[in-house]
Image (tube, rainbow, N blue to C red; front, side):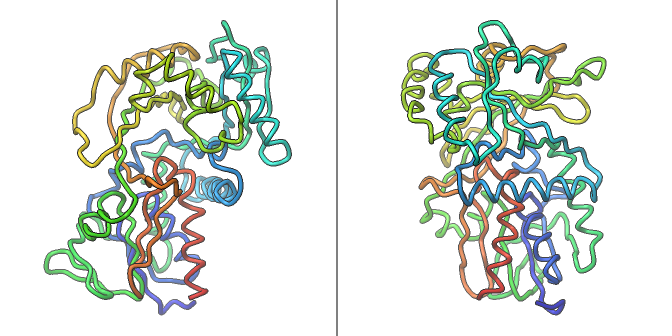
Length: 378
């Protein structure tokens, strides 16, 4: 590839940034067009967790690990907070312990996961509730960034690279051939990448409707900066998270645990709640989340859902200050057929990259490289 090749990337969220980075590294001239003055969608409304432990073993896990490597590299180049925290999944029942032990056994020699007893968990995190704790799964692979900072600074870093231009506050209303249009303005390129999240339905409504894709709304909470620079250690989660991530499906007892939770926590299961907490560089705590699926999602947050999240969180985490700083919701596209992404070659010019669900921070940089690498094979 040579610098005469031009690409347009629509969307400056994490998927768009990942594609831009990969294209620029291969010598493409890249124009990124974002409808807002800066990214405002799901890419800045999440935990900031780079979460390999949650990914299924095989290619998806390897993609997550490659993304992790890129995040750490970019944090140095772009100057944003990134902490190699690892993660802790806390266990408070015999059934949860059975699932955890099965998972750790299956991952021997594959992932870094290991079983810790309650005392060892306490050494990892002063925030873990030790009463009733039977132990936990420790993984060394997870990384935390603050998405609000990381997405903004990554865009700024890429914008300064040779051959990269960002056009902000321009909504693309149609694409014809190798041209994209915003009102009377147009831009052309050799290749066009649509990475605008759930908004791609406005450009290609029939394709969106025909694809195995829906939308997911999540509710999240941020607690204030913890006093005296107090840190929780690694991000924490508990038993419900075993049932949320594909990575844990290797545990034979997982289905039994899911059925148990339907009886023990019916409202949480109905709202798709699994509870996690991470801490950014400022000391603030990000807490969530719920999962509501469909194409007619309410724009209004439910305070009751946030109360459910905090109530479950208090079963396994303790903080110095529980004051709420802000609450919000985010919406992202989600595949309904179990796929981890939607990469669709529409024609000789246009590629749609979408549908990473809640794993955009974890998978996008690796996926971006894979999509661009495929261009060389065409």
